[in-house]
Structures are given as structure tokens and as C-alpha cells.
Image (cartoon, rainbow, N blue to C red; front, top):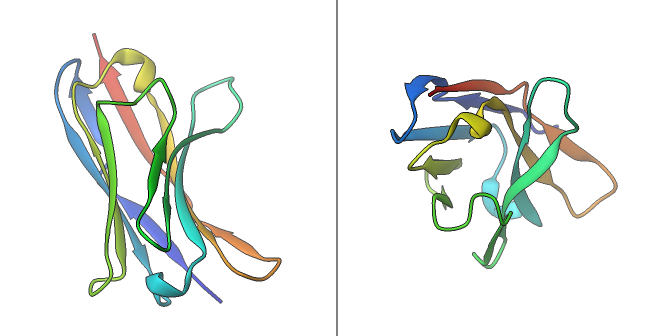
Length: 116
């Protein structure tokens, strides 16, 4: 069983930065990949960024050039550095652990609110 705990959300103004963290109870290097998702009010959950086991990354077009996903294997923690935040980035942000088996794991989310 893998548990994920997100932190780092909050209220910021447009143009400011936040860094989200996702603490993993298991071994982060055992994951096939890990993702950050977000869900805005009234919207479907969307994929924001992916980091694979080899360290390759991929981003949604809406955040490319502004967000950076990374991980610290020694700390079993994944991060999402968010710069130049926009009001449309307001959402609950979730981390997801993609296992090699059929079960994936989700955190409970952390709220990011960006005011204009």
C-alpha cells in the first residue's frame, strides 16, 4: 500500500510562485511513473505533468514553460514548481503514483488559489 500526501498549496496573486510537494510512503523509485493532476471547480480532472522512472518529463500545453516536475529519490518526494501562476491555474492539485501492477494511488489533494 502506497500513501501520498500533498502539501504546499495556498493563496497567491497572479505572477507569483508556489512549490507543491508529494510525500510518498513507499519507495518513489519503484513507481512506473508519477503524475500531477488538477481539478478546477466544475471541471474534469486533468493531467498537468508526468515524470517517468527514468526521469523523463512531460507537461500539459497550458503549463509548459511555467511548471517543473521533479523528484527527490532520497526523500521519497515529488515536487511541482509552479511559476508565473495565473488565475486559471486555480484548482485542487493531486499527485498520482502509477505502479507496475493494476493499482494506482492518489493523494487527497492540495488547493491552489490564484487571485488576479
